[in-house]
Amino acid sequence: MKPIPDSVTVNTGDQYLVRPTIDNFFMDTAEHLKTNYGLRSGPNPFIIESGAIAYRGLTPSDDRITYLSFFQKIVATVMETRTDFNHVQYTFFRNLDGVEELVKRQNRVYNIADE
Image (tube, rainbow, N blue to C red; front, side, top):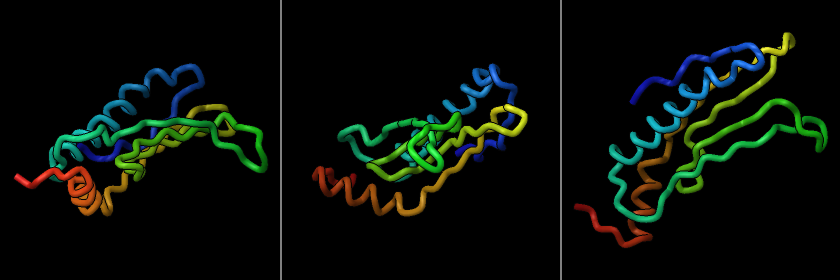
C-alpha cells in the first residue's frame, strides 16, 4: 500500500490539482483492503461520503471532510480546511485498526467460507 500523502496546500481555485491525489488515496486504500484481508465476494463494503464541517452551531463552514468507510468503519479521511490566507489545505489520515476482525465477521455474516 502506498504511504499516506503529505498535506497539500493550494490556492483557492486550484483544488482540482489535488483531486487525483485524493482519488488515488481512496482507491489505493480500498484495493489494499480488498486484496490483503481475505475479503470474499458479497455486498460492496465501501462508501465515500463528504460534507461540510459546522463550527459553533449549525452554519456550515468552507471546511469539508471526505471519508472512505468499509463496512461502516471509517478507514481513510481527507480534511479540507481554509488557511487565514484563504488557501485550501488537504490533510490525509488512514486507520486500518480492527479491519481484519471486521472482515472475518462480515465473511461469517454472509456465510462466505474461507478458501
